[in-house]
Length: 409
Image (cartoon, rainbow, N blue to C red; front, top):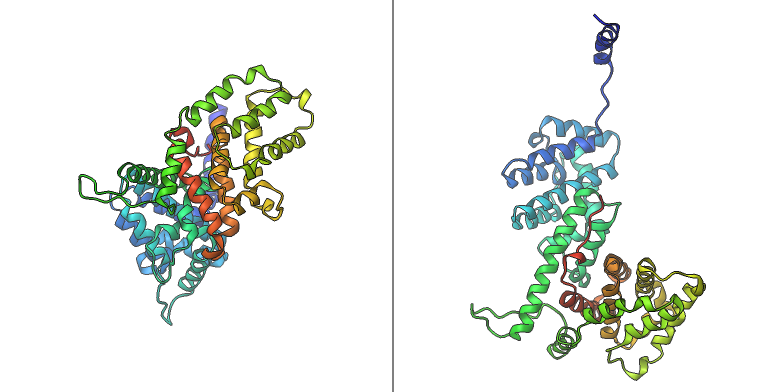
């Protein structure tokens, strides 16, 4: 027998006597529910979800879940409870979408948001879990799940729910989101975006009239027909198209230094745009902003990375809600004058030049939404008008797969 093997043999009983690393209770819960999804029955998952997260009942929970619940309560691990709740929800949503069993998503959301009557003899675990759950339901973290649930007295729709796609895209690309939330948010974004684009195109093609199947397609926007048809004509039927104009612009950038490129770029942003005379100041305002952001223009190399950075900079310049307090800034002026079309086409042109900035655009729109979504609908008509317009334009023009969220590795 070799000395090396003698050493390994002598270590074996010592290793077996060492305490095994303790698995956090949150991971125990997640692993159990993930294993449940390996079975064909989604109903089994919902039953366990009800018995553990919504109305904890030890009789319905297998031993691993009972032990994990004890550790969660003893350690007062509210944050861990919410985190594993979200992971399980989004893993279930991802599974349902992959299996094309979308109806189960609604059931999960309804189950989560339906108040559970609490009896006087409810256990400490049941009371604590329900208290944690109520806090989660009322938080911003639960907004997407509330949108997925059917409207009810306890789940009233808000005006901001129409624009949940902005939040889904932001969640899908947020490194702070769990992998399950990233993947499910990406799939939900694609589902909502494709459904919206289909309904929009069908409505524009049928003009709201009966189709061959006897179905009348409803206007999926809040924009009046006359305005919607005008947008369609300006954005889709225009020749050369906005993507073609962007391609031509990029093909000629090699002829410029960064200093000469800046006014050329501003000319591109406003070419083929029927902006009213009252916005004649806007090109100079944007050019002035660029010169302030890039003062060392002569020494800067004009390349693809710089063009992308400029587009990213202008997206935030045109959408940052902090600028709404400055009445000389383009953002409040465009909103006050209801220049939603001009604003939206500017953003479209930026993304067409630098498709990598589409994610920044979605996140900026979500940030703007987040500033006002708790305000009364009557006070946010201006913002809704802009969101409706930008959604239509992006849906009609940006149809390539590159405009889908890329989930971080």
